[in-house]
Length: 299
Length: 242
Image 1 (tube, rainbow over the protein chains, first blue to last red):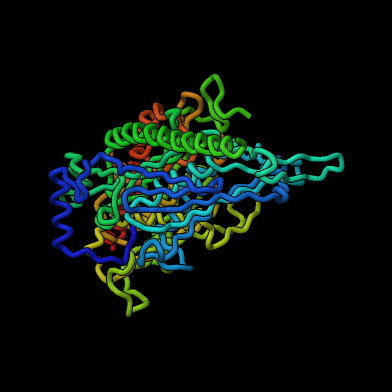
Image 2 (cartoon, helix red, strand yellow):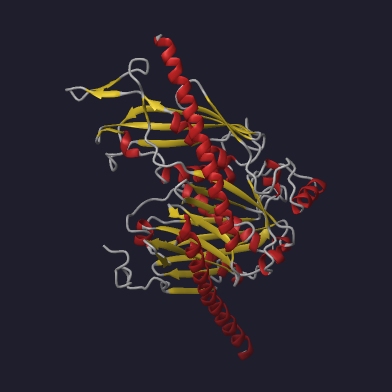
């Protein structure tokens, strides 16, 4: 949750009161995810994703480097998440705030640690040469929920990215064939992790939350900036279509009953399935468009 | 090496639902801090010192600019088998600190301590799995020792999954092999304040792990409660004997 913007008491009460009645300021239901809009750019691996007003651009780049000595059969993959003040005035450049650290660790765990990108397929000559894939996330506009959108953006971009084809000649030299000479090869993506964030609100006082057993805490999916500012804690679940939990992170905040967390995870699974299909469709549509273009050029 | 044998024994001889030897003491560093504790979960050993509530050192700071609770963890290079330097700005340690701050902000009755800071520092003496749980337990004890008002205990433990068998309180070897869930539970309730999973786990197994984790947390809470009461009685007897 970003700090630095003070919300007036009137606005706070209004928002909480409307949430208690099951209404959100942008007209969504409490368990409704915002619509994801995926725009695929001209070059391979450049994607622009919108989630309501939150907007990011992801760009993938690849180069050939030497692998780490202790992992000769694996390529390199890094994700750069630096939130600039462009997204919102509350982010400072240079110094990383707590929220930024949490977001970057979350993306790291959801995408890199879960092996979404098959690192072994990036190896060219064991111990000598491998591909290094780098994902740069540019945060363009902030209206809450950077975690979920970053994950969608990175996965879209990775699925769309194609690296140039290579061959190794008899002198063990690597020849990189430019994209217009040979058809480039896609990356091998093992699964598509999708993050879903829930924000918690407490309609009663703190004591009721800790001692009582009413479980009246309000749970909101995909919080906007206004909601993030007022929420007491959040829970981010990362899942893929195979009913696997990739990562869970609930850093303190309101205490939530275990059964409620189970309900959240079932809801998150439905959302993850829907978004996975949407990503796949977007990529497929773009592939078809490109194939058509190629055909036109040949004719 | 086998993590869990067909006979139902783990590498260190425990059954699936057995916690490692849990030892705790409070008021271990009377002169250097306001509250202190020492927690041992098997071979993981942690010392926690609390100072505060005290005046904020930078007096010009805005009262609600950031949290009044700070946590720092120091990991000397001898904590694990491979002698390795831990950088102060290691992202993983920073993440742990943020998790701990956010957990205890809700549990400490912060409205009783406006415009003051409570600083918690943890020194890890030996790391054998379950670092986050032992930090949570140590902080709970040290805050109680410092006399800081809290709503309830927070107790924490991790649970792993081996095939279909849940294993309670993993050590370092098991943590490396299995995917595990770390939970922090408030008091005797079933409410989860802290939840962390870093590796893949099937969704259908989550409920099982949560249920066993909560029971484990309650057991840890009972041991901590006993130690607090024992220490309290000891102090009381000292006063009455005078």
